[in-house]
Image (cartoon, one colour):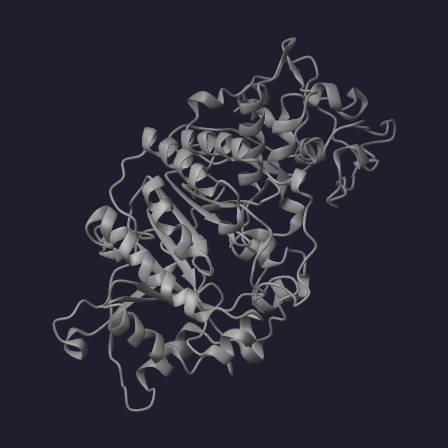
Length: 500
């Protein structure tokens, strides 16, 4: 393909390069001298305090300045200087690297994002992202050891957090591009004011585009609104949330013993959490007739347990029995490998792998529970099992799942994107802060760039930046090689500031 044809197919992220790069550094047919990539500050700061660093693009290049612009402008300029390759999903997008020589006399075409539904959320590894997780709050009413330090974490000012209106605007945009499942997280999302009305708005947006045919994670269902909570105050809200359109709830519970609950959460409240599990079962049964749903028979109520050696790894069988006996098989029980995040003290000595969990369950005391493997969904993060039918007779059997993020990661089929409470898109749970970009700043900015003498619409601006961020997603573990590398890098947020 000729150079001219390649230019005519290039992505919109480079369409304004004519105005931002000097012609001296962009002479066609003459290779530029060796140069270092421009490094931009990634510190979280107010837009008025942000300044770009100087980038030397050649002997006669001038210092590039971006006055009074947020980190969004830094992303645009960084992408022009880094290798940038788009993928193909239903229609073709072009690719361009920083070694391509542009002719400043050629007008660069704009991509019409309104007609590129699935390309926007497809990364360079061919993964389409249809699952969006939105953090509603940085605050939490517990202090779980694997989530944050005992003194808590510095919180953003309330004015820096997304408003309900901004969240709904983003939901509408992501749904337009193929998102059919949304989960609300935190912090603790139940601390968010007006949560019921927000759930209703999100549910209505999804119903316009997505059929609602199930609920279980990874079973191919769509049009779903879930929430992940510690359950402390869930009983007071769950009926109203289900009536507003909530289709599933994940409840975090790491021990069944009062003293250990106090140790891990640094708070009391075990009885409130266990009561909220039953109240959630009742609310979904009242609404839908049964708590199970979807082709896989998964439950709308899931219990999540982070397993740590020497703390709760001796309670795995107790959790399995609780799911089948106390809750009559009406819940899914999931065990999660402990993951490293900033300030959570992760270390190998307390890590329990998926394989070790299976061994503990099958050889625990006199129980000798026998589990049988059942099917997983195409984008499932969980390896699903259940107790063999002979073990519990004719009773309903809970699904028993294992989230193996560290020992057997599932990055190849990842379909998830995240938006933090302060409005940044985070394309990988383990990705560094450097790859976060503020969508909030785009929605709140007043000085928009001009396209053909017309101010660019914010939806188109959001689409371009979301697309660019997705293209930068690493294949696995945020670009880190293994859990130890993630822990050593310490370039992520604490879990409570990410939103799970």
